[in-house]
Amino acid sequence: MSSISSGGPTGGIKPKHQRLVLLVIALAALIGAGLLAAYALSNQASYFYVPSDLVRDKPEQGRAIRLGGMVEQGSLKTQADGVTIDFIVGDGKARVPVRYTGITPDLFVEGSGVVAEGRMEGDTFVADNLLAKHDEKYVPRQMGDMTAAQAKQVVAETK
Image (tube, rainbow, N blue to C red):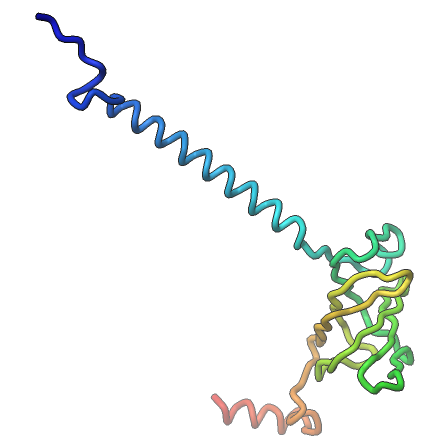
């Protein structure tokens, strides 16, 4: 009597083919997860603009973006509600009006750098978050009234 074998002792797929099928399934799952992650991130990406870029190439209304530049001197106005402020961000080439409702960072003042996260509504940038930047001459408030010699002494004492 002759017996016909169908692959292996268990009668199923050969182990070599099982590994190949598992590899193909794992690869497909990995590619699918990567595509899903890329799609999710593309919807959440926040693009960075300076005022001249924003004026030249306006993003679609409501799209999450970041606007970076300098808060113009004399542009900071507080609304009647006490928590909404309007100001202008400029880069020397263009100016963009900004509205923000909330508590501003301690370093946020006219003439300082700012990165505002938000969206365009009409011609106004509506910020949800403000990140204040300081220049390389930043000095902590506690050391602001000290002379250079006093500041050096304080630094030397903390070493």
